[in-house]
Length: 180
Image (cartoon, rainbow, N blue to C red):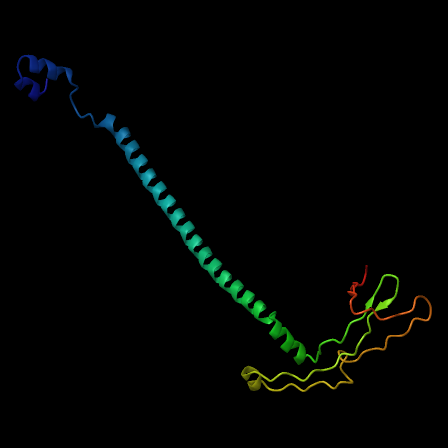
């Protein structure tokens, strides 16, 4: 018996004799290693999960920033399209290109008759320039003979078929589209 059991007397000595004597660390070593490995694995897993979440949040913030930039660019382009498609801007650009408002139109009926009397397009005097147009350098105006917009071809009278007659003012002309 060991010295501690010799000092105990009676019932305590008998109970101490039932306990294993000597170092018992051999039975605890695998359990301690298992707990340390589980805790280490859990910490590494948490670290990897945290870095993956941070990477995803960085990517998300980058995509949000890119979306904001693209939205701003799209809105600027839409504003530019709206500005250029305004009636005043279209008229100004048409005048810069040498276009003039058309004369009175003529329409062809399905049976080949001409409704209306075609008129020649003439250039109207340009309106007073706005302060913005004064600052721009003046473009040379195209000569009336060289411009295809101002030249009109005479409408030949049909040699065969129905005769052409102007439509009465109360009748509505019906426009036709090519290819139908």
